[in-house]
Image 1 (cartoon, rainbow, N blue to C red):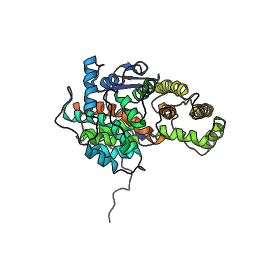
Image 2 (tube, rainbow, N blue to C red):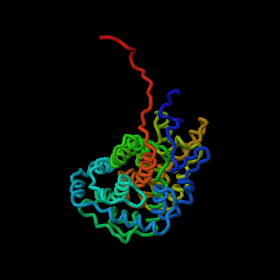
Image 3 (tube, helix red, strand yellow):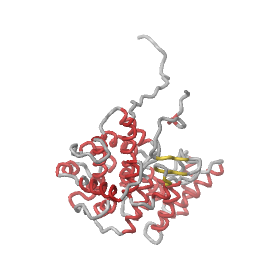
Amino acid sequence: MSYSPGLEGVVAGVTAISNVEGDIGRLSYRGYDINELVTLPYLSVMWLVIFGDLPDDEQRADLDAFLKAHGKLNAEERRLLACVSPDVHPMRMLQGMIPLLNLDRSYHFDGLDEEASLGLQIIARFPELIAGFRQGESMTGSNTSESYLGNFLHLFTGQPVTPEREEVMTVVQILQMDHGFNAGTFTGRVIASTLAPVDSVISGAVGALFGILHGGADEAALMDAHRVGAPENAQKFVDDLLAGKGKLMGMGHREYRKVDPRALVLKPLARKFCEGTRFENDYRTLEALELCFNARMKEKGRDIWANVEFYKGAVYETLDIPPNYFTAMFAMARVVGWLAHFIEARADNKLIRPKVDYIGPASRSL
C-alpha cells in the first residue's frame, strides 16, 4: 500500500460509535442524527455514546448518581491542583492532573469493567478539575440538585445557572462528544492498544486535542476575530492571510465535502445569543471572515465553509467562558467519546503498529 500523508483516506479500524458521512454532511451517534440528539438531556446522549442505546429513566438516574458520587475532588487532589501555576494553559493542567486522580478501584459501574469504571470516574471529575483550576479556593461546592453541566457552569462562573444557559451548553457539548477517528480519538486508541491504563489513554488524547489543527482551533478562530476587530476589516485580513499562505482556523474540514452539520446547528445559536450583547461584534466579524474566505476559495474552485470550531468560541463567550478554556470545554465533552472508544477497542484488542517507509541513507559502514 502506498504512503498517505496524515493517513488521509486510510481505513485504520472499525467503530460503531459515530458515523461521519462527509459526502452528504451528516453526523450520527449510534445511528441517531446529531440534529435529533441535541434535543435530548445530556446524560441520555452520554449513555448512548458509552453503552450503545438510549437509557431508560432508571439508567439515566443511575448515571447521574454515579457522576455526583465521584465528581468531587478530594483534599489531596485539590492540593495538587493548587500547585499548578494559574499561568499554565487549562489543557496542560488536564493532561497532567488526570493521571494523578485518586480513583476508586473498588466500585464498578453496572455494565462496565474496572478500567472503564475508572474512566467514568474521570468524566465525573472533569467539572471540578476545570472549575477548580479557574476559581481556586474560592470555588463553591458542587450542588447535587443540579445536572452535570448545570453544576459545572455554577462552579465555573460562581453564578446561578439559568435553564437557557444550561440548554446552550448542552447543545454545544453534545455536538462535540465523538467524531470518528479524529486525531485525539485515534491517539487514545493507539494508547489503549498497548494495554495502558484508561487515565493514560485520556491524558494522551487531551494532549492531541490541544493542537490548533484539532481542538485548539476554537480558541484560535476567536483570536483571529479579535485581531481583525470589526467585520469591515475581514476582507483585507483574509487577503493578507492567503497571500502569506496562512490558515484561517476553523474553516473547512477534512471529512466534510458539504457544510459541517455541527456548524449548521452552532452558527444560528451563536447569532441568537450574541445579538444585542457585547459579543455581537465578535459574531459579526466571524461571519464576515467566513464569507470572505469562502468567496476567495470559490475563486480557486473550492467550496469551504466554517466547521464546528469556528463559531463555538462566540457561544462560549456568552456563557462567561474565557478563550483559554474553550478547548478544555471540548475535552470535557469528547472524553465521553474517548471512553466509548476505549471500551470498543479493548473488546477485541490489537496493538496498533503500522509499517513505515524508511527514506534515510542506504546501508553504510563506518
